[in-house]
Image 1 (tube, rainbow, N blue to C red):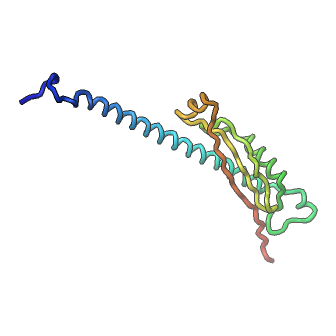
Image 2: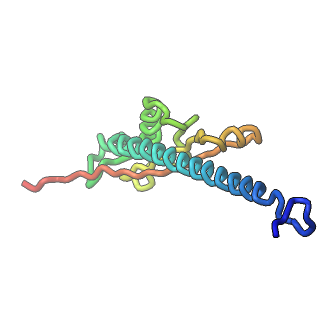
Length: 157
């Protein structure tokens, strides 16, 4: 016997449409989430590359004390020199893709006088999420830290 839509007990009418709609929404949210997370990771890696290069450049800067007391086992560094060199390096480079701003953050300097520590903070421009957060007055900030050291290899005669 065939059931027609007017038969009593037919509670399944239209259920497949709701299920398909629900699965499409779930799929769309997953795809958009993956795209946003991937974009955030790529932006973080670009920011880390810039911080690494700034730290390497800062590790080569020499503190004024090197001219009076010489160079020991590593190039002497000062907080001011590391910070200024990192700022100069970042200002000479174009912003990476998907990055709105970047700056040298607190914690940049030389904690031991031999290691350059550079903290870079940037505001990311992520697809899908940035316009939503901008409407709410927020943003996505990524902070990375990089360290570099310039040791002196003294050859023995």
